[in-house]
Length: 281
Image (tube, rainbow, N blue to C red; front, side, top):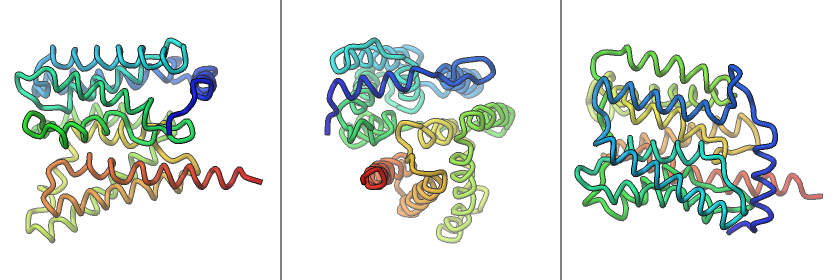
């Protein structure tokens, strides 16, 4: 499943040869800037981080592993935007009070998965999602995930959603985010009938910081979403939302992470097979 160094180098060169500009800024820097904004808004408003040192450890570990693994596999110094996003996502999403090694390990697993779990030059799991799910499986005694909401003040949520929607639209990924949000709202009604809770209680989680990262970064990640068509991407997102609904109805706490962890690689493998058959004589 591991790609050769030459193949990885070819893909890396192609991806970096013509960077897209958004508002005059290299698109590879837009996501890091946006996720940093989410961090500061969430931290200043509601204190979503366990601590800044833990987040710093996650970012530093991600950057170090990205550099080392890139140098070992393709012999090039990598663009570090992806590593920064993975590290800061781990810092925001992982809950582990007074435990620092969990942040470093989660970040290391996330970055390593990009270089090890590959099929035909594509890594099939979103790195942050894979790392967080791995830690939830391997160390549930030491790790939980973020569950803090934005509170009753919707100003922070509105700012994040407006900026996020503009950025995702310019990156041509808005249909993915919109499909997930509409699916979540629709399935919340089904869950309310199942649980007996109010509809507003069921839609409340999507206002949280965790879901901002999930809908703007994890499910829209260009490297780990299907590539065959926009229609296929929409179908996959609906399936992810469906699996999440089922997991929530079964009272699975980390439903969105697990839904993406299950559906994402299956969809990517099908997509890889489809594209390979389409390219064959």
